[in-house]
Length: 242
Image (cartoon, rainbow, N blue to C red; front, side):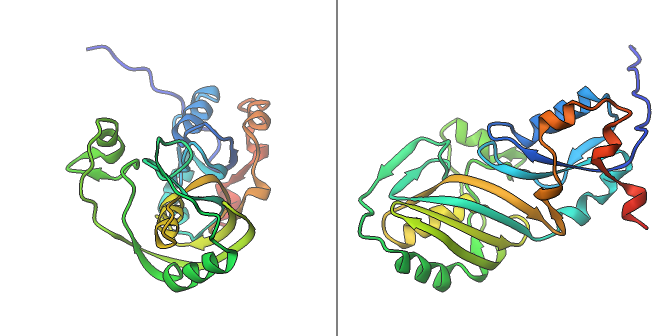
């Protein structure tokens, strides 16, 4: 049997805050950082969709032990709802299923629906294009085959939901909610409540728990480092537990 060569233990343990670029999956970012710096342990604490940008928390070495703690933190998102457009993925990456006239929708109508239906504890049905598993198979794999299965509603809580700008059919918003919130599903459901449908045009995560994208680095900035200088951009475990 062929022996696999093990990578040396990671010389540094802690967090690396990445400002994820659009069109990269969270897995893409982890794989790039792990392979570029030849790390033995590297994961992330909370997926961002390929469409989304913003804070992606990478866990390196013994920092992986903080996964649950960080993932359990509340999340902040800023996004753009496109009224009148329904897609199969609930965002701009999907195939358009239906388009409806939405010019009669006002900012007040949007804000009233949000305050009436999308604040506090609510339930949402996860989208088919998600990593949630049904009978051991990820939903997005079933979706690729054109299959749709019944999904159990999931309980989340929305603490803040503010309309930042309204230029029909686009609604820019900021939301703070518990982990596991599908923001594209919020966009989809708000559009449905308004009777015109909706999808997510853009999404950015400024914060997760106590961590902020203001302290994050771009992929280009990180890849300018070598293994010796990478810790300069990390939050080391020894500093977290002081």
